[in-house]
Amino acid sequence: MRARYAAYALGNVRFILQTARTEPTSSAQENANQRRAIKAFCQSTQFIGLHILADEPLAENQATVTFHATLRQNGQDASFTEQSLFERHQGRWFYVRALAQE
Image (cartoon, rainbow, N blue to C red):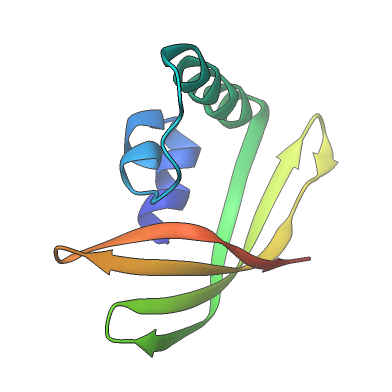
């Protein structure tokens, strides 16, 4: 989780996509749009801090991480708390999806 947060703060779109287990996009255009959207989010966001609230193993290769990210966008607070699902595949942890967000 910390590595992904740092990647967002640094605008490292490649790392963000490489550490996510998401449905593959169906076209090169969708992939390019996804990359642009992530890059735009990174560039328009000030990443102030990350606090891990909890991490809980669910199974041998699954865990949840609950965190609070402190962010600002356009001078406004954009902070949020999220519980995320991660899965380990071939020894590496991947973000799967948000389970809950406040």
